[in-house]
Structures are given as structure tokens and as C-alpha cells.
Image 1 (cartoon, rainbow, N blue to C red):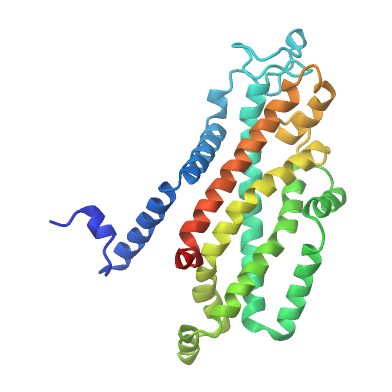
Image 2 (cartoon, helix red, strand yellow; image 1 turned 180 degrees about the vertical axis):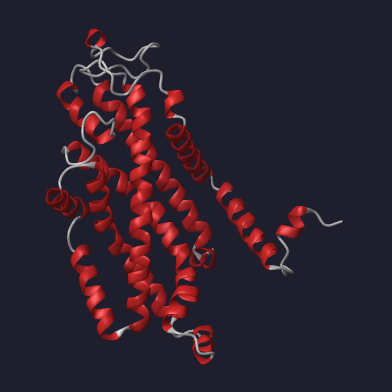
Length: 301
């Protein structure tokens, strides 16, 4: 008697639902077979859970000051110590996970679709369209992301919303390059030629056939880039151009703790550890997704 596993792993699925479920099941099996990917999934799951239930997890207010307990070392009462204003660092790190997750998600939602669309249009049409779009893309790629983000934030003004916009503006060109390379391969394929013969317009071909096939590569690149997005956001916060006080943003917390790094090391170290752990989590997950979703890796093995 056929089991659910046999149904999911069938070589010849009988319906679109079975095919989709089988692909998802194989993806999950592939991810779970890599210990580092599992660790990355665990770290990101903890980040998401912490962000959702921050009010329940944090024992104290992240912004309320209590000068009578300022610069207390880590203890059972204050797990990560307190800062110069007597605020519990653990509570601030917990609530800061919301800001970090918000920045990562919004940048990905803004930058990835823009880069995907620009790259697909450039690769499909070619000619002067390709030269213009890729010329603009190369201008952005020629400058370091952090420097470019600093320039945009300086022009837009400090703040978390402007920081998200600035990071998104500096992130999309890499996605455009990937989408263009994928589109150059796909646009001359037989199934695209068949769609053209059936009267399919360029917009339909790009939206219904090319963009979905570029999604796998885009997911891999976005996941790997999330660590860089976190570091860029922390850099802007450290320089005072990102989240503004008293928001518990990790980069800003490190900036306020640098004056106490020698004697009260925990003030700057704890949010720094949070940045490193979350960045590693996204890197581990991105590597695992690349192994599972990239067909070239499967061929090489």
C-alpha cells in the first residue's frame, strides 16, 4: 500500500498538487540533511519568535531608564547587564530583533522584485534597452554599498524608514544582474519560442514564464544578502543615521556602548554578538538553499 512518502516522491506525479507537494518535500529533506542549514533555520526561527513575542520575553521596558542600576554587569536579574542609562540590555536586544527583522524583510520585498524585473526586461529585449538598464546597474555596482547607503541617507535624512529605502536602493543591482543572466539563457529556449508562436506578448512571456524561472536564484541571493543587509543597517545605526534614540537598534546600541568598551564590555558586546549570530544564521540558510535549489550543484555532484 502506497504511503504518503511514496506519493510525495513519485517519479510521475498525476496532478499539479502532487508535483508541487513533492518539490516542497524534497526541498525540506535537502535542507534538513545539512547540519549547518538546520542550525541556520533554528537561528532564524528564534529570531522570528523573539520578534513576535518580544513583549512577553523581555523582562523590562527597552526604553525606560533607571539610573540607580546603570552599568550593572550580567547577572540573573539583568542577563546581559545594563547600559549607561540603566536600561536592561537583554530587553533592548530582544526588542531590537523586531527592528532587524523589519529592515531585512522590507529591503528584500522592495529590492528583490525591482532587481528581478529590471534584469528580466534587460535580458529579454536586449539592444538599447539592455545597454541603458545595465549601464544604470553598473553605476550602482561600482560603488561600495555602505558608502552609497550613507550618501542616500544623508540626502533623505536620518531615520529607520530612510535607512530601509537607502539600503534597498543599493541592493537591487545585484539581483538585476542575476535575473539578466538567467533571462539571456531562457529567451532563446524552445518553450519561449513556442509561446511566441502562440501569440504570447513580451509582457506575458516575462511575467508568466521568465520571472518564475528566475525565482530560485533570486531566493538564494536574497537569503545570502540578508547578512550584508543586517550589517549595513547596523553600520548606519552606529553612525547615527539609522534608527534614532531611544529605539533599541543593535548598531545604535553598539555606538552608545563604545565609550565603555574597556571597563563595561557588555554594553557593546551583547548587541554585537546578536548581529554576528543572526548574520551567520542567514549565511548558513543561504548556503543550504543554494545546494538544494541550484541545479548546477546537483549536476556537479
